[in-house]
Amino acid sequence: MHRRLIVPSALAAAFLLAIPASAADFSPGAPGIGDPYYPASGNGGYDVSHYDLRLKYQPKTDLLEGTATLIATAKQDLSRFNLDFGLKVSEVRVNGKKATFKASGTQELEITPATPLPKGAPAAIVVKYAGKPSELKINDWTAWARTPDGAVAAQEPDSAVWWFPSNDHPLDKATYDVSVQVPNDVQAISNGVLQSTRPVGKDWTRYSWRSNKPQASYLTTLAVGKFDITTDKTADGLPVLNAYSKDLGDNAGSARASIERTTEVAEWLTELYGPYPFNALGGYVPNVTSGFALETQTRPFYSPRQFANGSNVSVVVHELAHQWYGDSVSVHGWKDIWVNEGFARYSQWLWSEKEGEASAQELADYVYASHPADDPFWTVKPGDPGAENQFDIAVYDRGALALQALRNEVGDDVFFELLKGWPAKYKYGNAKVGDFVRYAEEVSGKPLASLFDTWLYQPTRPGAPAAAKAEVLRAPGAGKLAQPKGWKKIAATNSIHEHGHDH
Ligand code: TRP
Ligand code: ZN
Image (cartoon, rainbow, N blue to C red; front, side):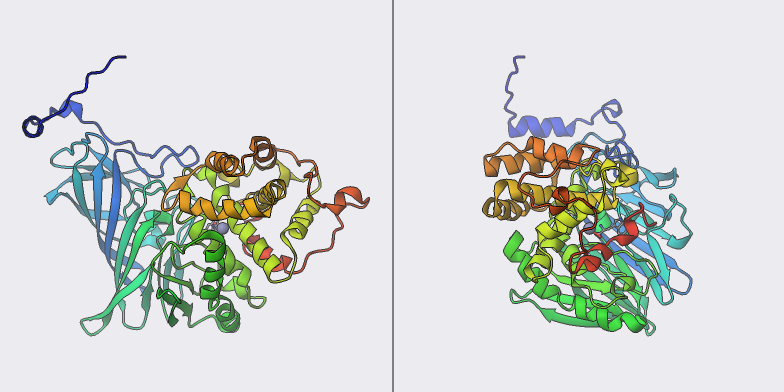
C-alpha cells in the first residue's frame, strides 16, 4: 500500500485540535486488558503513570475511606473507560469535572467523563470511596486479611481491587504515593520510602510512602498494625525499613534473624543480577495466619509461619530475587509466570550452593528424582500452566530445572551473563517466556528452542538432561535420592501452594 506522508504544520495541528471530534469517533475502552487467564483484569484504552492514594483506615470497624487520584493518558479516542475496583464509590471526577459512573460485575467501575478524552490526552481521575474491604465478595478468595490489630492487603495475581481503583494488571505499571491515616496505636506500612509521619488531630497519625519506580498494582501493599520497626541504610545509601508485628510470639526471633539479612542478600543478588532497581528495601511480617510470602515491591510480605521452624533466609532470597525477576521485569501476561517463579526459585538454589549446602545440580537431581514419570507434576507446563495451575509447585521446581538444563547446556559463563543481562534488557518492563528463549539464543549463539520446549512446554517428564549427573537415572531404586541439605527451607517458601492456590 502506498501512503502519503503528511507533515502537519503547527497551524494545521492547532486547527485540527480546535475541531470538536464527533462523538461517533470515540469508543469505550475494553473492560479487560486482554489476559486470557484473567479476562476481567486490567482495562483497555488508557495507561496510568501515577497513583496518589490518600486513605484513612479504622481497624476496629475495617472502614477504609479514601481519595485515589490517577494520572493517566488516553490511548484511543475514549468515550468511557473502566477501572477495576470493588468498594463503593461516591464521586468520580475526570480533569476536574464530575463524571458519571456505575459499578458493573464484582470488580468493574465504568466511568463516563463529561468530555470524551481524545487519544493522547492526559487525564486526572479522582475517585472518592469508602467501605469495608473484608466484606467484598470478588471471587472465591480475598486479598484483604484482617489481623487482631489491623489489616493487610497482599495477594497475587491481584489485590488492588480490594482497596484502591486501578488498571489492575502488570502491563500497566505506575509510580505510587500511598498516604494512610490510622489511629495512633498502630502504624501503616507500604512500599518504598517513608516520606513523613504526621499527627492528625490528637488521635490519628498519617504515614506517607513513596515508591518512585514503575510498580505493578498487585505489588502495591498496605499493612496496618502494631509493628516493631528497624531502619538502616545500604552501602549505596538506600533506606532499609523492616516491620515486625509485635504479636509474632515464638517466631519473632527467627523472623528477625532472616529478614535483618535483607541488605546482605540484596548485595549478593546485585552481583548476580545487576543494580538493585528500586528506591528502598525491607520486609514486613504482619500477624496473619496464612503461610505465604509475596514479593511486594521494595518491601516483601512474609507470613510468621515462614519462620516457625527457625530462621529461613531462603525465603528472603526468593522474595528479593523477585525484585529483579518479577517486579522490575514483570510478566507480560499471567501465563508468563515462569519468568518470575522459575528464577526466584533458582535463586534459592544458587544461595544454597554459595552457602555450601546442596548445589543447584544436587537440588535439580533431587527434584527430578522425587517425581516419577507418572507424577502429575510433569503434566504442568511451566511455560503456560493455565490459570488453575499458575502457582503449582511445578512452575517453581520444574521451572528451576529448566534453568539448570540451560546452565548445563551453555556453561556457567554464559549462564550467569544471561541472568545478569535480562533484568537490564527489560528493566521496569514486561516480558514473555518466548522473549527469554530468544534472548538466551541470541546471547549464547546456540539453538535453545528445543531445550526450552522440553522443559517448559511438554506435559511429560523430560529424559535425562545430557549434562546432568542425575544419578538416579542410572541407579535402580530411582526416587530414593537422599534429601539435600537445606531442602526443607527452600520448599517451605511455597509449600502451601503445592496443591494449587492458597486462597
Ligand atoms: N509469588 C509468591 C511468591 O513468590 C507466591 C504466591 C503465589 C502468592 N500466589 C500467591 C502469594 C497468592 C500470595 C498470594 O512466593
Ligand atoms: Zn515467588
